[in-house]
Image (cartoon, rainbow, N blue to C red):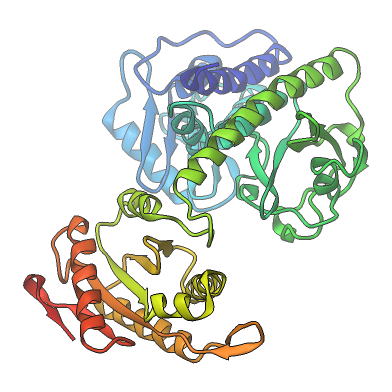
Length: 463
């Protein structure tokens, strides 16, 4: 299914669920000619015979109106009432001079439907349920947009396959679904369905948890599992029901696992079980192909000795950040050739690994560390000022000088020279940072090594 197809399938899935609910209510209310509002809002308006439908957030307002439109005074009044209710978590009914306002609010958003004053209690109750479902769907629009963005790229990513599988299984079985994949750091939640908690994404499940055991091939499918992810998931994200956990098959070993909150955590039966197995069998090869593509891409941007990004990986990281500002630190191990000549290349490799580990431990998660040459490293600090770049470089210099580096049991000494540049302080664009940082690094080595030099304004270098 294409990316737009996934979005509209999810949209139609929500609409279909509402429509089935309406079949149990009895005959539908007379249709009101639609205006040009959002599709789900238009459906809500027509299905309930409303005089207008609204969806409001902190900075958004969507309205569905009958063809003749909504009087300005009515629109203003309803928006004021929904704004009043928006910050709560509530549902209710208000009588207005124009009719009866049915409203629901959740997480800073509010939806409202204006019904004729003579509408029955049953119609109002049905409208309340629809409004609550609308808010739940609206909560997931950013997630669906992210799925669309991922799938618009050439080739599927593992994350997009996981998302699609989670949505497919929820539509197939009608239950909340989480998809976990085996990663280097552990078993990670990579896809969730509409009914699941978006905050679970990228969480690493607890070692030895049911989901982790099944995903890694250490356990067969499990039924009646109370906490498939283990206690690593905070209480506010934990699920009260029981889950069924089943692996995603791969060639030789599972690629991950799926948690399904079925009734009682039982394995699905009949046609549902066949559909589940078919979906998992189809997802397995796509996941393997996506993971292989990602692995090849990582190899092209990764230094094999240290595991850091290489020069290409650094360039990609610097151009992918949306904030235009940041500081770039270049570092070069002092007297590295002499160390290699004296102790041999294995000792040189050990020194490079020692320095790379020190760099990684000393920076924030958002910062990027790369090995861009033989003994030359770089640290990209997105959003950082020139002064912060200098402080980081000085901390790294001192940390290396006082670190405990040993080769074959003998303590050795290491030092490095550093050059720092920043945008916008020393250059108007990020493209000028590498040249300036390199010039500052050259000045540091020329000036005696084991020091930090900062690029000055106008491209000059000031120590």
